[in-house]
Length: 220
Image (cartoon, rainbow, N blue to C red):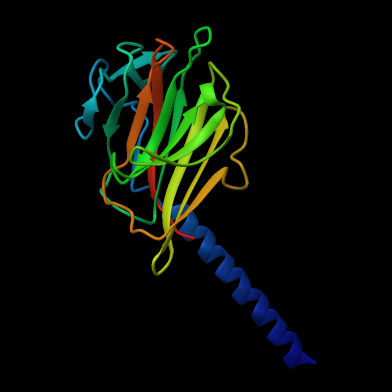
């Protein structure tokens, strides 16, 4: 009986140690890249950003700094940031836009550069869309809320040899992150390498704001 008791006690201790080790590792894990613009200079773009096109600049409102894309001209614009990778990477950002009458902006986060994968909120279509380069790969319904911050999260992971998963989700400020991905895509072609990006098209002629950019290493 004593031996059985000692064995059970040892098992409990071992499980507890394993649990705390996992908890400590999770707590110690840090993003590969993050930027909340609080240390950025107003009126400029952080030095580590590569502006592809557009009048992006850091602005401040209510004590919070963010990167802003002006409401004009009406075109598509983007900025590259973070490390260059092709798989097992996730990117997230909070993005703010407003509608003007029936006109609405579109905005996105991307992995693998401009030719890689893009998770785009298209309010006029009431959809979240997954693109590879300029090619629409998948679309699902999504109810965007004007005048609220929306968080976008996109990841590309290698599921097994010759197979990759592209997964994305979006949720409005004040709501919890969805338990499951809103949109998923299985790919057999190796993802392109490139830096993450934030993108936007101010079709509503109102500015688009970006904040809390984060790049993390991830996997299935």
